Image 1 (cartoon, rainbow, N blue to C red):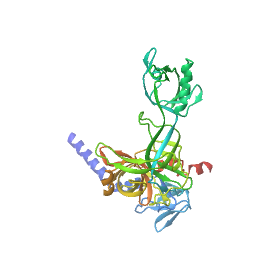
Image 2: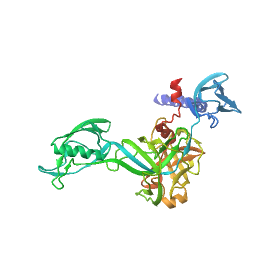
Image 3: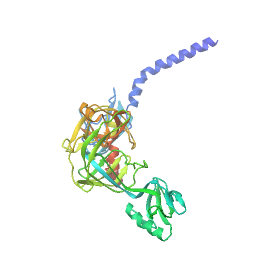
Image 4: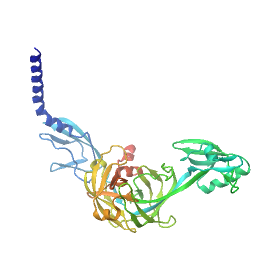
Length: 424
């Protein structure tokens, strides 16, 4: 009896498999049809799956058919309808975006940032009459805090702190501080202590109001003068926390030498720049996707000086590409890379690509990706697709890249026509 039941169950299972086989291919084809397609106007034919015995009907005049291929006629929204013998089986929503073109960078830049308020980067001990202590630490002020106000008055520079300390010390009073701690605001009371060694009033805090470094320009929009660079956030070297900027400047930078990278030790560009000369533009934003602002004038790299189209993350493919960067002086050069992997991202995220340096000349001179190369634009098939961001410490020939669409979004360039959509 059990044998008979088992035999029948096996028979039913085999019959089910045989019946399902003819439907496997059509089902897979159906599932390959996307619900939504996003394209740029006039950049290339619209890529949609072609299925056997299935027709694609146009439901909007913003798309035209030429020799079984579909082309956009104007920005906007449209629909494609898959039909079998006139019976609709699936609708595809098509978003046609305005052409977005930017000029790739590659220029080496010096970066000067000024914090909002003054940044606490450490504590130190003060030898007073009542012993040795750190007044700042006793007041529960932490490393990474930003002092915004003292006694209700805004603080923007380090030199503005000293007069308040001296006045409070002489009057034997405490200072009332307004502090930004992460996303929160806290108040603290801090009383200076007179140091026995040099007879000055001190608060037991190491503070800083600026940071400097070098990087690379990623792109420049000639219409809005907006630019993006670095591809990653600038953090304080001591606190390792992102710098909340008050203002900043980018300037021309001259690469003087390269310290090659080795396994476990990242290399570095050595460069010279002056914050008082050769100013290129302002820095208004420091985000996980880089620094952003406006240029004072147009800049050129000598390689790609005309606006180029961009690629969305979904359109980036594995394969060969190029980066633009400076390894000597101010000359922007082009080098070969391989895009090892790319993640189609629906939402902004860093580290969207893995790239590998394949150019033998660059490998010989730098060992791969080095510090200061961050922001170097990545080009594939005549389009700007992103920027170099990080190096793999254990393999300096490889590293991460960020997709250009997220950098443009951070720069305030509306590639998805959201403002037009709101207006309409």
